[in-house]
Image 1 (cartoon, rainbow, N blue to C red):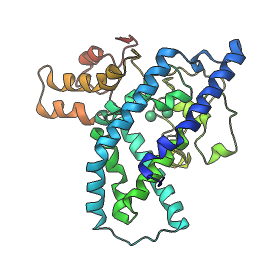
Image 2: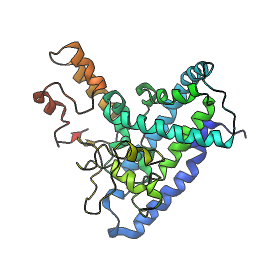
Image 3: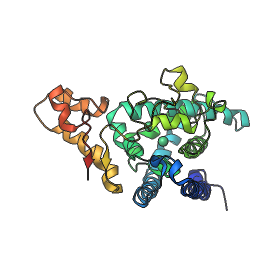
Length: 300
Ligand SMILES: [Zn+2]
Ligand SMILES: [Zn+2]
């Protein structure tokens, strides 16, 4: 069997499933002492696994187009970078830097949030939450963030491999059953740092965007360490009460287009619904309409 870089997450699948089984068994043994928000439910886990499969299908379908664009741009590369271990290490750091900006943009530009919201809409956090991904990332433009790497001269398939290794690493930070890893957490993204990222508590919202290295958050002012006196409340500002993978994938797209095309407003304001932060509304009166500033759940 030859190694296919685009199948890296599939190769990792048995390890991911083993960790999920271990966590599920550990939670059953710990019974009352484990946080309720870490517990597995059939509906949440089944929806996370379905979303992972849909995400793979989406990426598979988009791969032909994105790889064609990457290889076309690769012809205009700035440098001829040799295939060495040092070049791979450099690529890993640069890709992680790009990932930070991809992730930050995914929270602050509604067009991108429409995809990324899927990952955040569970009120539970365990290893299976890492599977909760969107099929629409290629439409939101995730692939655009790796173009600088290709333009620098990194071979497109190697770039894809590093992106997927980064995502594979991030599987392991979706748990509430790990130690705090205080020392490693000075440089690396840890379960504690990522737990903060999944919380909707006012102090934690839109913090800790890191992929593998937490240093980017520290450099760009978005880092916050987990505080022992704050109980994490997982999910999004306006909670989604649904386990339907299709609804979870498309609800924010639907709301975004509805906001853009409804009411009386200028073209620039209509367009702003796509590029402004997700909570943006033209005037305060309209904000309660979409419920971003409301605590009422979005029931489906
Ligand atoms: Zn996020
Ligand atoms: Zn996550």
